[in-house]
Image (tube, rainbow, N blue to C red; front, side):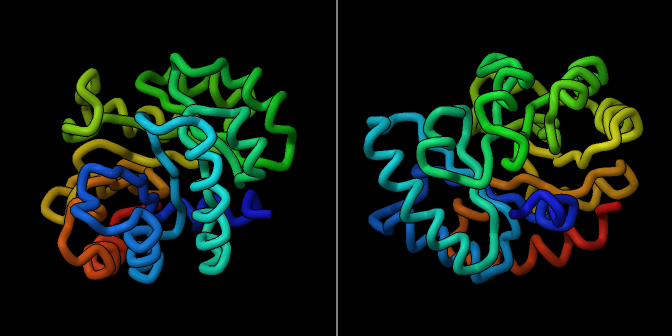
Length: 214
């Protein structure tokens, strides 16, 4: 359903994180982000029972679709299929992209993490619809994430024919540094969900993202 407009949908890619709930519900935070203009949402849960993530995915999917935004599940292809989410994003260690595509079927969105041109080209060949490249500015979200030079980001964008999203420590103060890299969007976690006013943070980042994407 969303694959045709994928390049536009990737502009402001929000990734959920429970770190900053502070008594609020994830549902309410996601709704604030969607109101602010998040165009793509990845549900990322690391420490919940699978049955609870499935329940949550079904509720969040309904909310996303109300705002005409695709919902992607992080890492778990089987759960994405079970929830009938719009797709899945897998890392290099999660599942080989070809196997993920086979399980998802041809209509769903497949995102793959890549850190090198070789990884990017392989993912594209195996059926990836878009790539997540980072960590661009470093990140506290993933302890093992290493920074990627902007020249590598630009090289990946030039090498593939699918959209590329930059991820890792992106916020309003540094997003302009990505101008001219060739990306189609930015993936943001704390720059949206770590803010007191999530809706306003999303509004501001979306406007800034429009100025730097290809």
